[in-house]
Length: 421
Ligand code: GDP
Ligand code: IMO
Ligand code: MG
Image (tube, rainbow, N blue to C red; front, side, top):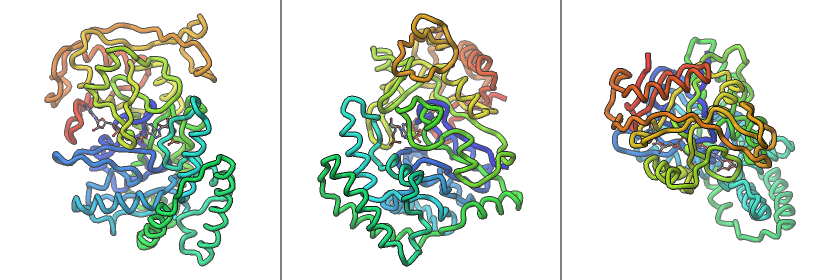
C-alpha cells in the first residue's frame, strides 16, 4: 500500500518534519509533484536541514527515496542539495532514485517565471521564481525535456530548440537579464545528474509494492495551492492533492491507503491570493514571531491567521483524509483566546463552502472563540499531559472535520510529536 502525507492548507504545514518522523515505518519515501518551490525543514539533532526536491526520508539510511515523474526537477538545486546532504554524512548513491519521466527545469524556465511575474505587476502570484509554472507549461504543452531524455544523443539539439522558443517569449516580455552563468551551472549539474540512479519510476515503485514494501508519498505545497482545487489563479502548477499521487508516481488509486493530512494549529500563506482568516494586526504579528513564520525557500514573511475549518473541511473532502496531524500547537501556548473559523459570510450570506472566485468576493469569516491554554506544552510527551482547554480546541476541530486529529506536534524537534491514541 501507498500511504500519503500532504498539506491541507497553503503549504508549510510542517510536512518535512512529519515525513521524517513517519519514515521510520516505511521502506520507500516518494515525492510525487512540485519541485524546488518546496522547502521542507527537518531537524536532526540540533542541525536544521531544508530539503527542496529530495524526499524527507533521507535521514533514514535504510529507506529508499524516489523523485517521481510528477516532479519538475532543477538539476542545479539537486546537485547543491546532494552536496549539503553529503556534508551531513548522507550518501545518496544507493538510496536516491529519480524517475526518467520527471521533467527538467532549465535556466530559461526560471527567467520566464521571473518575466511573467514582473509583467503581472500588482496581480503577481508571488511565485518562488524557481521556474515551476513555465516547466509545467512545457510539460502540458508537450515541449518539455525529461530526465531520461538526457541520455539521448539528441538532447542538446532538443535543448537548444526549447531555449530558442523561450528566448522569443522572453523578448516579448522585454526581459534581457544575462543568464549565461545559470546555463554554465546547469550543464555542470546535468553531468552530475547523469551519474545518479535514473529509473523507470512507475515500474520501480510497482515492483516495490508487489514485493510487500511500504511506500510513503510526500506531498509538497498544500491542498489550497492545488492547480484545480486551490485558490486559482493564486496556486502552484501541479496537483498537490492525494489524486496527484497516482499520476505523479504511476500507482493505481486502489493502492492508496492512509491519507495523512497535515495542518497547522492556525494558518499561514506565503505569496499572494485570498486568505479569509488572515490577521493583519498585532495578533497576526505575534503568530509570525512565535511561529517563526518566514519562508523556508524564499525567506519571505508568511501571512498568518486563525485556523479555517471551511478550507480544511474542503481539503479533507478532496483528499479523502483518514488522519490529521496538527503541527505548531506550541505556537498557540500564550494566547488568551483562540478563534476557529467555522463558516464564511459571502456577500452577506452564510456558507460553509469554498466559492469559485474567492479573491473577488467579500468574505467575512465567522468565528467560534475558545479559551487559550496559557501553558508551555513543548516538553509534553503524551496526550494526558496536555491542558484540558487544548484538548477542547483539538477535539472541536476533529469533530467538525469528521476526521480524528491523531497526532499533535508541539515543537520543531524530531521527537516532538504526541500520539492522541
Ligand atoms: P513544510 O514545507 O510543510 O515541510 O514546512 P516548512 O518546513 O516550510 O515550515 C514549517 C516550519 O515549522 C519549519 O521551520 C519547522 O521546523 C517548523 N515546525 C514544524 N513543526 C513544528 C511544531 O510543531 N512547532 C514549532 N514551533 N515549529 C514547528
Ligand atoms: P512547501 O512544500 C508555501 C506558493 C508561492 C506562490 C504560489 C506559486 O514548502 O509547503 P510557484 O513557485 O509554485 O509557482 O508559486 O505557491 N508556494 C508555496 N507556499 N509552501 C510551498 O511549498 C510553496 N510552493 C509554492 O509562494 O504563492
Ligand atoms: Mg515549506
